[in-house]
Length: 383
Image (cartoon, rainbow, N blue to C red; front, side, top):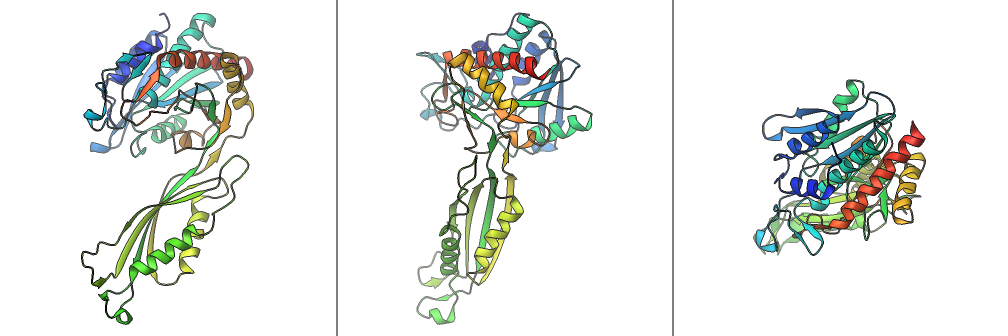
C-alpha cells in the first residue's frame, strides 16, 4: 500500500464527531490504514457503562527496540455552533487551513505519524525493530480507562517499550519549534472552612467563615511555593472558585469553600505538596477540611538520546532543533513515562479547544517529514 495522504487522513478523522469517550468511527479508519501497512491491530475496552472506553493498539514487527507513538482521537465538545464559521466536523479547507474540532488536538498528529510510517516502509522496508501505536478515546476526559489502563495491560502481557513519541500539539509559532520533555504535576484542592453563623450586628457571637477563608487563601498565595528548577518554571497556585452560598446580607456565614489548583514542578510530589498546603492552613487556625486530587505528578525525561534524535530530525526539516520545554497542562505522557523515555512534539496548537480550531495544511506535511526523519534516526541509532 502507498503511504496515506496525511491531509486526507486528517480530514477523514475530523469528520468523525469523536467527543470523549466516543471514537465515532476513527478507529475503523485507522485500522484500515494500519492493516494495509502490515500492522496487527487490537481494540481493548476498559471500564463499565458510561465510563467504558475503547482503545486501539497497533504493532508492526517482532524485534526490539519497540518505538511507540501515543495519541488520542477524542475531542472536546464543539460548543456553540454559531461561534464557528464552518461546520466543526466538516473538515473544511479554506485559505490553506483545515478547520474542524480535533484538527490541531490531535488528529493531524496521528495522520502525520501514519503517513510517516508509510513513507518509512516504502523507503526502507520493514524496520529493524518494531513500531506501535497507542491510541485512546479518553484523553480529554477523566483519562482513567485510556492510555493508563492500556499500558498497564500491555506491559502485564510482556510488552517493553524502548521510547515513546506523543503527538500532542506542542508547537507554538511554527511546526517543530517546541518539544516537551516533561510536564508539571496537577493538584486540585477543595477547601471547606467552618465557623459559626450569626447576625452581622453581633459579630462577637459568631465566627465568620468567610473571614477565615480569606485569611487562609492569603496564606496560600502570599509566598511563592518555590523558585522553579533547572527545567521547570516556578509552581503556580491559582484559586479557581470561592463559594459562600449566603443569600442574606445580614447573616455571618458559618461555612465557606474555595477550590484551587497547583501546577507543580519536580521540586514537589503530591504528598509533600499537600503537607506544605496543610502547614500554611494550620498556621491560620480554625477548623477546615481539605480534599485533594492529583491527576498527575511532575515528571522529566532529561535531555539525552531521545531528545537528541528528535532534535536532529527537526533540524533536518526546519533548519534548527526545537526548544525543550515543560510548560502547559497535563497529557498522557504522564502515564507513558512510567515505562520508557517519552517526548512530545506535534503541530501548532494555537487554536486547540477554540471555535474555528484549524491547522495549516502545509504544516501537516511538515510534521509528516519531521516524523519520518525521527523514525529514520531512531532506528539508525537505537537498533
